[in-house]
Image (tube, rainbow over all chains, first blue to last red; front, side, top):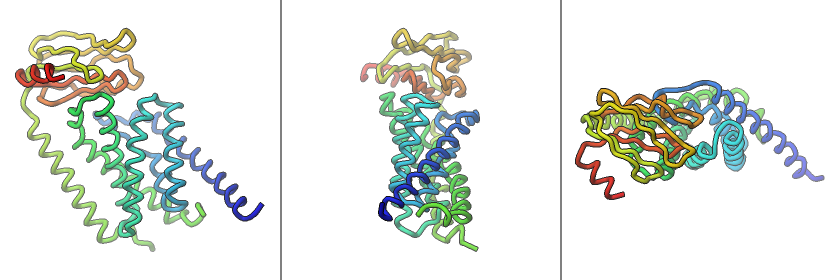
Amino acid sequence: MGWQGKYMKRNTAYLGMFLALALICSYVESLIPFYFGIPGVKLGLTNIVVVLLLYTSGAKEALAISVLRIFLAGFLFGNPFSILYSLSGGILSFLIMYALKRTGKLKVVTVSTAGGITHNIGQLIMAAFVVENANIMYYLPVLLIAGFVTGFLIGILSQEMIFRIGDRIGR
Amino acid sequence: MKKRFGKTDILVLAIVFAVLSGIWIFTSFIIKEEGADVVITIDGEFYKQVSLREDQEIKISGDETAANILKIQDGKADMVEADCPDKLCVHQKSISKNGETIVCLPNKVVVEVKSGEDAEYDSVAR
């Protein structure tokens, strides 16, 4: 076994741990009746894991964990629809965060805030397709603000974690 | 000490926040007309249109398995029961203004307030 095999082994163990962490975050969030009077608003604790991986391990790893987490959490605590909504939000926000990070001009907080906002946009677009009614875009303004706030909070938490333990995780 | 916020970040965050708040304030001001009817759709298909002026309870059921109960009282529509697991639509506040909606995603039910005229138009267009 060469160094590549060793790296793979180490990486698999790491990613497995992060996937478990993301699932725990999902579980904790499903326990908290986090309700603001608007459907679809969540704190998005699991995004800490995604942001953390994006900055410490890499884009591929972050995307893989995000998608796997969505499917597993959907099977465990949700329903087929929650998978669909989370998936569209998760992938859109990931792409935006990745693009913004690549510019190299923005800090973690801003990247995460953009992720929070676009996550809600992605989810709402999918919801509009599923119910075949564009009128639910009525929620968009509130969801955008909610995404900003939650994304910002998650960004601060993620940034602190990256500063403190970032060099000990990942490659 | 690592830098947590750069100048660009503060600028971008401030602009984005201002724009989003602007959209929010703007839309909450333009949508304040009291509606006349509620239109119920299931899976994008027109289901029923009822007046907000009569107090009543409507059972919304596309097929035999999924059902919601919508209550209309004092010119406001409120989802009082749903057989979905999350019950987000039940928690939602009652609606009465033009364009406001209650959505039950698992059952694909959308309840929307409309003014008398465009409600009829929409039900035909679908």
